[in-house]
Length: 229
Image (cartoon, rainbow, N blue to C red; front, side):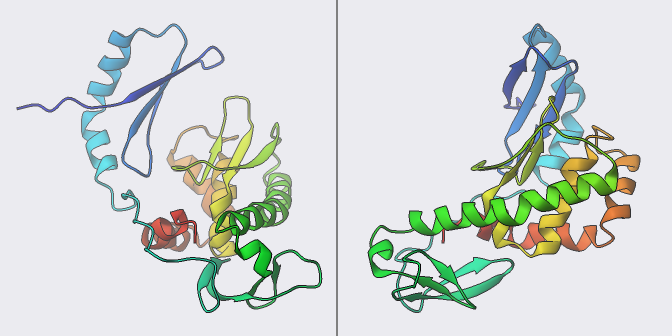
C-alpha cells in the first residue's frame, strides 16, 4: 500500500520556483510561488518520493531528545558553550550579570528566574560571535546579503531567504567554532548556488576544508544543542 507523503506548503509572492526541504525533525516543507496549484505541488512531491524517502530517513535527521528532568541553574550543573561543557557556579558577579570565565558565573537573583536567563545570555553571545563572522566570510566569498539575524528557529541551524537575508539559530553558539563557520559558509554559498549541487559543495569545501567533520558533529550532537540546558 502506497503511503501518502505528509507535507506543509509555504507560499510566497516573491518566490519564483518551487523547492522542497526536509527539516531536522523529518517534516517536509514545500516552498512555492503564490499561484502554484495544490495539484502541481502534489505532482512535484510525488516525483521526488524516492529522494524524500532517503532524506527523511537520513541519519542526520532526528527526533528531539527529551529535556533531562531536574536539570536547573544550580551549582555543579553544566552547560554547553562553543563545543564544551562548563560548570555552573551560582555566585555574585561584579557586573551583576552572567559572566563566563572557564565556567558560568550566575548571580543568585538571576538563577532564581530559571533557564531563560541563560538562554538570553546565549542569544547575546550568538550575536557577538556569529554575526561578525558572517561579514568576514561574505567578504571572502565576494557575496552580499540583505541582513543577518540571530533567531529562535527550532528546526534549522541557518537559512537564506529569497531576499538574501540570513538567519542563524542562537543554539549554534553551543557548538565548536568550526561547526559555526561551516553553517555560516553553507548559507552564504547559497547566495552563489541556490541548490545543493556539486558546485555548491565545492564552494563550501573550498572555504571550509573540514566540512565533513562539521556535518558529522552536527549529526552526532545536534540533538543536544536543542536542549535549553
